[in-house]
Length: 377
Ligand SMILES: Cc1cc2nc3c(=O)[nH]c(=O)nc-3n(C[C@H](O)[C@H](O)[C@H](O)COP(=O)(O)OP(=O)(O)OC[C@H]3O[C@@H](n4cnc5c(N)ncnc54)[C@H](O)[C@@H]3O)c2cc1C
Image (cartoon, rainbow, N blue to C red):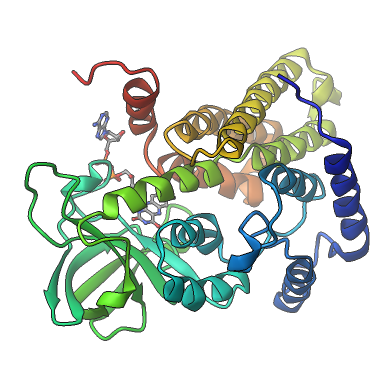
């Protein structure tokens, strides 16, 4: 296997570095106007949705170029590529793969321009890991579906304009994965109610979302009726791959190293303490393994495959190291850790990040059954 980048890819890396030198906003300025300016400059380069096909409004970049782009952005601690994380990471790719032409024309330009914000409606009060047991129902009434039920842990539903939603359109028959349909639902539809759920840190990121006789045009169905499971399997693989990008972890690790440089242990910088060095080295080794795994997914996609079960490996690895990384950070801060601040907030948030997109046990089940081919019972 050749781990080197081609001269063209290295030239692209230089192009990204030059762009950053010219356009990167200062680290302490993340005001909305600054971010809007940043997003406009990125959009001109077509670097938002860079690996989407040009005919879908993307940049037509290769997956390796996109990887380089994200790596350089992360090293520079740049703001995200576009502000609609869910739209860009899994709704857009699902539309490109399963959408009809008119659906692509309707939704993709707004996702690329961050004009819409998407949220995701999978989990329900009694249904999380076992997603195929979902109870939200849609019944066909002429050219509309009538949607009833409730979704929970709907991140960003209070800001979102659209929800990417799974519901049951016919009873479980021979397979419980059949009869589930994916609908694209406007959050402005009459009959939708969003109730906030506060997190451990007191922030409002989650919601419970209720659907009471919400009418959804049949034309907002993504994929065939009853075949939403196929749509969502690809979307979940993309979600897991987005959650566990090694570039994000490299950024966390760099911040942790800086913290260890600034902190004192036994009268010396903590980074000189052998036990701290050994912990950081362990994180670095895991993150390098995640990076190589990420390259493996990309290689598979370059050969014509789609993101699939293999993304569960990095999702699981992220869960394994992120909490110990935050524990080291709070230890380094010592009494300062009680004063609040971003490390403390992240230390409380990461337990949730480990669960979002599927718990570690569920990733282990996927790896065991779909990658290693182990029996189910
Ligand atoms: C930060 C965050 C963001 C989220 N955002 C969204 C969102 O935007 N939209 C959305 O729809 N949902 C969202 N969720 C919900 C998330 O997808 C679910 O919490 C997750 O899938 C687990 O479901 P659950 O909470 O019902 O737990 P359960 O499924 O009840 O699991 C409880 C425990 O049982 C274990 N378990 C369950 N089944 C098995 C099994 N078969 N084998 C082994 N162990 C098992 C689990 O690992 C876990 O430890 C979010 C969650 C978090 C934390």
